[in-house]
Length: 344
Image (tube, rainbow, N blue to C red; front, side, top):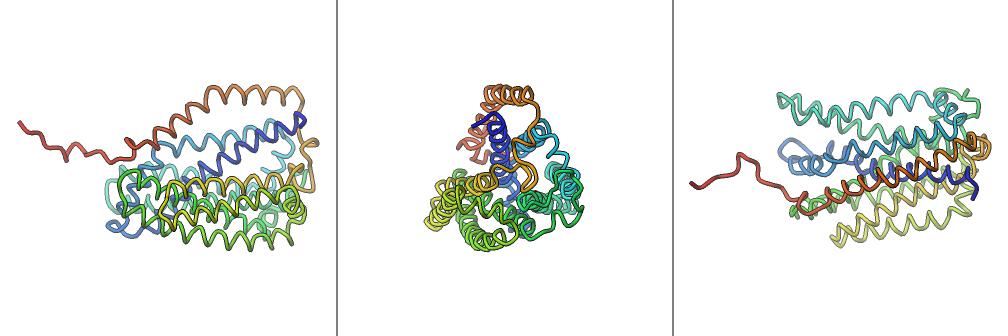
């Protein structure tokens, strides 16, 4: 593996991390939107707030990492992607801002109607954002981003692979979030909610599997370069994803939610890794290879050093945050001050 390949791998580490951690956050939007009215959906929405409240903003670190790494390591492909895919990137940016604002303001709304408005904005933005991120990935994977960045502003990101990429992004994040919420609810002692989310996640997993099979046909026709890579070196990873997803659905059926979450993580990570391996060694499919698009060697060395420093300083802090959030103490609902009675 050359230095350019190493830099590309380090960039893709961020893509995998954002798909998992950011994806689990985004997927909560679908469950929030479909939770029901204020009475029926109260327990689920409370669990969503508790599960993602401490981490939802920290997870966007991975998106910042991806964009900065791509811009620094592959300046020409970065410019081409941003110029050609300006519209979906704009929608993604608006979605992230609106989602974050709505999630924060919902807790401090002055009226029920205002809280409902913020809730709907949070939920819909959480669905729209991964959908357009999937469309961006589909545009790159299908070779619709020319090296000079002069691709059509509409047709470049509305091809068949882009549409299926958007749908799969929403489905996989929904499935991932559902398994997380089921496991979190059980750890917090809410068995009824855990079983409810387990049943719903099982359905989401089955639907995701069916759509993924259909996606294989679309990729074969609309993205032959990617399809060729998936037939060869990417095939074991795709089979791993299918096996992990099936195992996760089985564990959901068996009400083993913590194990189902592990299976979902492996399944989603394998899909993303399979895409990267299948597309290798293109940074822009059919346009620019990794070697052609990489920046100066001094920049490559600097990025590797920065990654190593971040791995030593920032990553342990993130790991500790995730450990705390997944602890039993955090998962248990503590009584509020107005629920406490003091015997004198």
